[in-house]
Length: 85
Image (cartoon, rainbow, N blue to C red):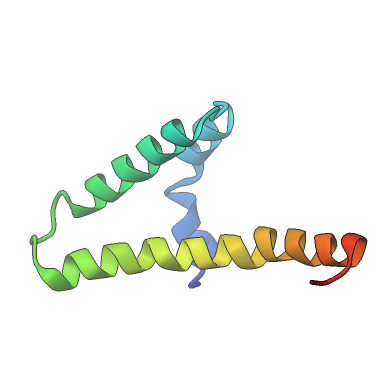
């Protein structure tokens, strides 16, 4: 997953700070926020296969990174605690 440098991150700091003070309580709320961001990203882009594909691919990269950092570790802990299949 590509990471952006600290200078690029600065433009998002205030909105991420505001968002960090809001408790996302359901999968529906999480999906709403993610969809809103995707729609905002696409708002000034040409609706064509390559743009749509890149947007979906970015979501997949994020999902893969989340899985690598959190879900895979949880699975490894469960195997360690409960034994492998």
